[in-house]
Image (cartoon, rainbow, N blue to C red; front, side, top):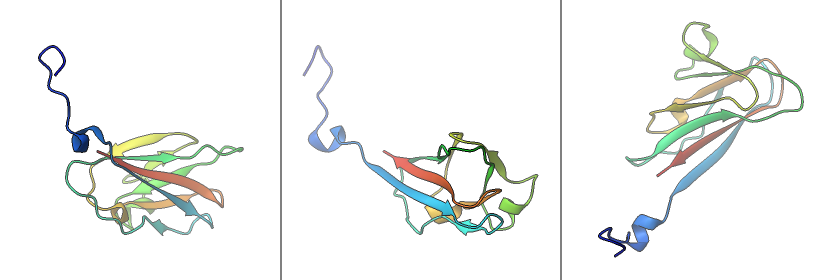
Length: 108
């Protein structure tokens, strides 16, 4: 104990992180996130990875949403968003340039 603050147990002190890459190989071809269920308590971030050339990526939360300009999130290099989802497969991706990469990260 440090000045009245209890020391976290070994389990509490370990941060859990799940990271997956999603690649849109062919621009205009919708890609679903990987099927990884997330236990309660995880915070999810989606980031478009940095690329040498500018490119626009899209994230939606249904197959139809990612193609609709009013229901998708438009991203550029290194942009990120925080979302509440229970499975990475709830996110859908597309891009304007082939081989656009995204990172899907969950932290607890």
